[in-house]
Length: 343
Image (cartoon, rainbow, N blue to C red):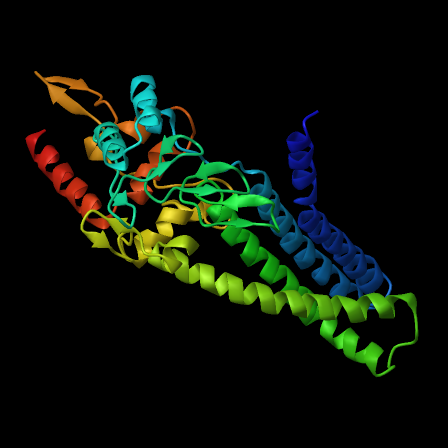
């Protein structure tokens, strides 16, 4: 076994330490709340039942969204963004950057690309050997290009991007609710144990530390959750918040913003009944007027360019709609109206 392979295996194993730590804390919090607080400390049956029901609802949603955030594989660019064999060989042999850019521009002319590098060049990943779609970035930890990459989160050991950003937001929301509920319901018993109004018992240690841990996580999660809600409202990623995307006519920090309501729908989908559930949802009604065209009176499906026609990942169609700049969306709406009149 090569040393580099052993090193990669060790790195992958160590990357799970933060996730294991969170899992252990959650398991302990479950035991401390259910057994030590509700069963051993609380005397009134009605209070026990209410606390246990609400606790388990928040616990299930928290674990579900956390699981989906961890184990949803990041979406990567489709095969249409890879250089064809001839162009790839020509690109690798060419040493002049100007000529390399000409090769990339030729291939990119048939792809739905609107962003560029800071120097105005086509965004190309030499590591993955793929032309980067809009909002796509290479993650060194995952060693892959990730669609709409937000950041690599060590607490989920995964890249947060197009395929799991909704799950990540819900994970923050339900973990905040989970911690707030624990802190609020434990507070009175924390005070009673602290002032010795309750007799000394094994539950004292768990109740005291449960409040401290819940309060500590509340503060840290609240700031992160608030920041990401702001990003959702602006339709920006963390990367774009620090470095505005560059379009053909220059940088524009609001280049992907479609308005507050539509920005939220870009992450949570257009079916509000699924917004609070950690299931994949995206815009389903876009481009409905452009989905078919008529040729000599016969209705035909148009050929979808680039990422749209790919079967490489299940998120391709939604990704193109979500990440088209606002001026492109305006053009599509105008075309939709024109086609409706023609039909």
